[in-house]
Length: 203
Image 1: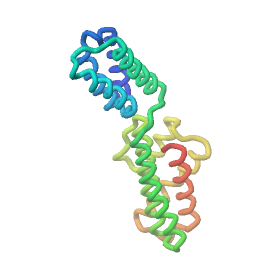
Image 2: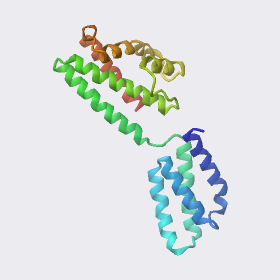
Image 3: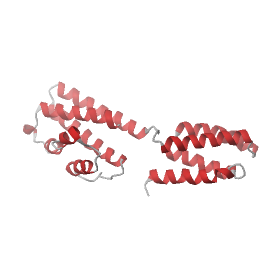
Image 4: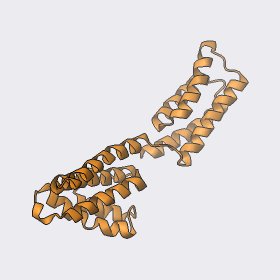
């Protein structure tokens, strides 16, 4: 079972037992804290923990405190299942690859197209694999052609984006195998431009 499915299932389980949250506060609330942390719901986690930390020394939860805790839990469940969760991993990935692209652009501007090609192709390949992983397809050990074909077959890339990606594995192989005479500044600029758009759209 995928992580996302396990988190959704656990939300449902804890929702089912939430009617006993008052009697089994410590058990239920500890499970909720663990779930919110695993789900990456930091704002909900902080709000729930405030209630938890306040109640813990008293050993007894009041009706108003219980309602507040249930409110935070249900908000977290709705936000997660509604797809409104900010992904830190994707944000960090976007920033890291953005740095690679910036270096590639600088290298190309300074006349170092070969360096720019390696940086841009490495960023693209890694970004495609991370994008596949985020959509539950583990292609980390596959070559770029396989990754591109998989993304296309799953409908994760289409249209002009799919068409442009068809030529990327060849440029990537030229860059990684030092076939510099086959790589033009224009083709490198094309890779850089594609990666920039891909990062903006997907990360």
